[in-house]
Length: 265
Length: 274
Image (spheres, rainbow over the protein chains, first blue to last red):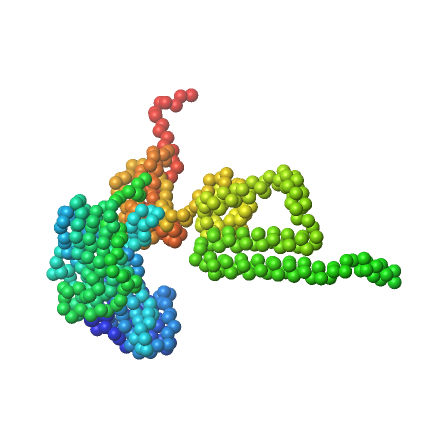
C-alpha cells in the first residue's frame, strides 16, 4: 500500500506471522510479529527510489539477514509507529553563511530528520524499538573540554513554508532569530536541542515546536524560548510525540557557533 | 601426669581476670574490625553515593586504616601496654624504620601528591611508558591498573611521579593521527580531496573539529602525510579499524600509491671505468 503524506505513521494491526516494511529514502525497516516476539530488521538499501511507503511483505520475500533483532513482548493489539526527534542536539549548518544585522529578526524553517519508534498501544504505550531513518554525521559543538556531542546536519534555511517540500520523515522546525545585540550576527552553525521538542502532525507534514532565539551578543548567553503550542503555520496540527526531555521555560545556552578557537594543528 | 601438673601450675600462676580480659580483647578485635568494615561500606554506598569512585575509595581506605590503628591501640591498652611509653619508643623506632624504608616512605608521599594533584582518577585510561590500562585503584604505595589484555599491573607511586603520564580519557574527544607516505609524482590536491572525503563519510569521525590533513615532509621514499581525525572516546576502535580499511580501499580504487622503499640507480654511459 502506497502511503502519501504522513499516513505512513498510521497505527497498524500486525497479525501473527505477518511482516510489514516501512520504506524511507535512506532506511528500510521490516517488522514481523511471531507469537510473543517482534522481529525487526533495519537496513540502508542503496538506491531505493520507491518513495516513502508502508507495505506488507510476504514471508518468503523477507530479507535474509543475520541482523534481525528479536524483541520479546506479550502485548497484543495494533502497534503505533511514532516519529521522534534525535536523541542528541543537532548542529545545523545552513547552506549559506547568514548575517543578521543588529536589531533585525528573521523566521526560518528547518527540516530535521526524525527517528522511527514503534510502540505498543494496548493496554499501554510501550516502546519496542527506535531507529534513525536518516544518517546524520557526528559533530562536536563547543570547545574540546566542555563541548557536547551532537549530530551534524547540513540543510537549507527556508524563509517561507511554501518552499519546504512536504515530507513524512522530515519535521519542520520554525526558528525565529532576533539579533538583540550591537554586533552583526554571522552564523555558520546553530545548535538545536531537539530532545526538548515535541513532534506535531498534520496530514501533509510533521512539525516541531517553534523556537524563538534571542541573541544578545557574543559574550552573553543566547536566550531560547520553546513555544509549547503547536506552530500556527498549518491548521489541524495534533501532538504526535512528546519531547524526550521536556524543557521548562527559558533556557540560556551557547547556541551559535561563532568562536572558532580550536582544532588548529 | 607431669604435663598435666605443669599445666595446672601455669593456670594457677595466671592473673585471676585473664579470662575476662581475653574475652574483652577478642570482642574489641572482632567488634572493632566489624564496625570499621560496616562504617566503610555505609560511607561508600550511602553517604558518598554520588561521589566519584576515586573519592569513595579514598574515604573507604581512610576509615579502614584509621579504624585498624584504633583497634590495635585499644588492644594494646587492654594488654596493659603504656601507650605514652610506646609512643616515645616509636619515635626512636620510627627513625630506624624510616632509614630502612625510604622507598616506601617516598611512595607514600608520592601517593599523597597524586591524590591531591589528581592527574587521573579511578576508571581513567592512562599510559605510562609502554603500559596502557584502566586505573583500578590509587593507593598510598602504588596504583593498580588493568591492561586491555587483562593483566594486572602495579606501579609504585614514586615512579609515576617521576614519569610522563598520559591520561587518554581526561577529555571527551581526541584526535587520532595517522602517518603514512604516498609515492612521489602523484596529484597531492587529489589526495587531499580523497582524504577529506574518507573522513566525511566515516560514521565514527567527527566532522567538527575538522580533520587535519598535512603534507608533512619529503621523505626518502615519498611524501609523508599526517591525517588526523577527531573522535569521541567510545569510538576509538571502530574508527581505527574502519579508517585503515577505508584508506587502503579508496587509495587502491583511485590509483593512489603508498610509498614503498625504493632506490633509483642511474647508470651513466662511460662512467664506470676499471
